[in-house]
Amino acid sequence: MTVRPILVWFRRDLRLADHAALAAAVATAAPVLAVFVLDDTAAGRWRMGGAARWWLHHSLRAHGEAISAVGGRFVLRRGHSADELARLAQETGASAVYCSRGYEPWASVLEREVRERLGADGVEVKRFAGALLHDPDGLVTKAGTPFRMFTPFWRSFAGGVTVARPIAAPRKIVSPQRVPESEDLASWALLPTAPDWAGGLRDAWTAGETAAHARLASFVEERLSAYGRMRDRPDREGTSRLSPHLAFGEISPRQCWWAAKDAAGRASEGDGIETFLKELAWREFSAHLLHHAPDLPDAPFRAEFASFPWREDGVLLRAWQRGTTGYPIVDAGMRELWATGFMHNRVRMIVASFLTKHLLQPWRTGEAWFWDTLVDADLASNAANWQWVAGSGADAAPYFRIFNPIRQGETFDPEGAYVRRWVPELARLPSGAIHAPWEAPADTLAQAGVEIGRTYPGPIVDHGAARKIALGAFATLRG
Image 1 (cartoon, rainbow, N blue to C red):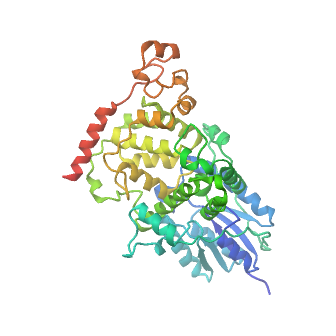
Image 2 (cartoon, rainbow, N blue to C red; image 1 turned 90 degrees about the horizontal axis):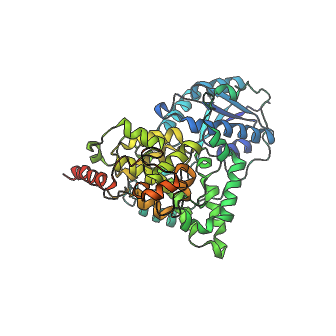
Image 3 (tube, rainbow, N blue to C red; image 1 turned 180 degrees about the vertical axis):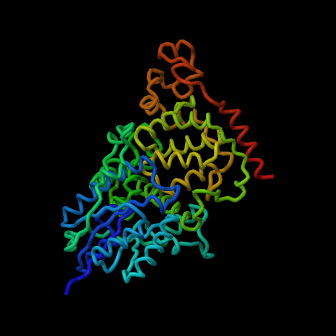
C-alpha cells in the first residue's frame, strides 16, 4: 500500500532544527515534500519590502541546499497560497499539509482559508507552534486580558512560562516518488538589478540556518557577557545581530533562549544573560500585542492619538530618509540602514524619536520606510516599536521623552566612531565637535574640511524649538 505524502509548508520558518511541523511530518514515516509559496497577495500592503526580499532569495537558496543534504526536495511556487497548495496536493496525492502557525493578521486569515480549501479536497491541515516562545492566548493577566505593559508581562513570563528545549533537525527526509516541478528561484526577481543597491547587504550578511547558528554561537561566546553594558553602543560590536535570522525563522527563539540559559553557569556572564532574555521577551511581547490588536501596524494603540496633529512634510521626510538632517547620529543611522539593511537598536530609537517628535511626521511613514529597507522587517516588532517611540503604543515612552540627538550621540558614540564610519564627510572632526558640527569653531571646521551647508547640511530643525513644538502638540491630547 502506497503511503500518501505530507507537504510541509514553509513560510518565515526557514530552518530544519526546532521545526515542529517538519519533525512531526518526518515522524509519521510518510514521504515529506518541503514547499514554499511566494504569495504577494495575502499580506496586502505589508508584502515583503525590498531588503527583505533580498534576504528571502538567499535564505531560500540556503534552505533548499539544507533540505537536499538530508535527502529531501524543496518545491517553490508563486501565487495564492491556497491555490498553490491545493494544486501541489493534487499533483502529489498528499494526505496533509503541516505548517508553523503565523501570528500576523493575514497569516491567520490565510491559514483558515488553506484549511477550508484543502479540507474540501480531503486534505488535512495541521498547524504547529514554533514562531514564538509561548502561545499569545495562554499568557494573559490575572483578569484574563492581554498584557499592555512589558514589566508585568516579563514578570509573568519569567515566573510562569516554561520554554521547552529545542528539537533536533531530522537526519533524513524521504521524498515522494512523484515530485512536481519547482519554479526557478532566479525567475522571481527578488534581487535588485537596475540599480543593484544590495552591495552593502552582501558585504554585511550571510543568510541561512547555518549562518544563523554561527552568529548565535559567536555572540554567546564573545559578547553575551557584556551585552547588558554594550548593547547601546553603536560604535562597538555589542549586539547579537540575530534579528534577520529570527525574522525569517532561520533560527528559533527557543534556540536563542536556551543558548543564553546554557551559558548561565559561566561566572563571567554577569547581567548580559537576563538582559538578552528580556530582549527576546520584548520581541514576544510585540507579537502578543499584534495578535490581540491586529490593527497595530495601522492604527494607534492608544485611541487618543488618532487626533494627534501630525505635520506631513515630504521635504523633511526625504531628508530623514537620505540621512541629510544635519544631526550626525541620525544621519549615520539612516545611512547604515540604506547601506546594510540594518540599524543598531539604540540608533533606531534615536531616528524614530527624531522623525516623530522633532519633525512631527506620522509614525506610519517611518514604519513603512523601515518595512521596505530593513532585512529584519518584522510586522509586530516594527509596529510596536514605532508606536512605543511615538508615544501611541503599549507601554509607550512618555510623551515628554524627546531624545536629544546631540546628547544621545555623545553618550552612546562618545568617540564618534559610528558617525565617522557612516558620515565620512565629518570623519576628520574631533570627538568633541562631531555630534554638533555647526557649533564647532570655524578653524576646527576648516581643518576638518567641513563646510556647514555645503559639505554637510546644517540642522533642518533646531532641537530646542522642535522640542517645544512637540510638547505643545502632545499637550493637545490631554485637553
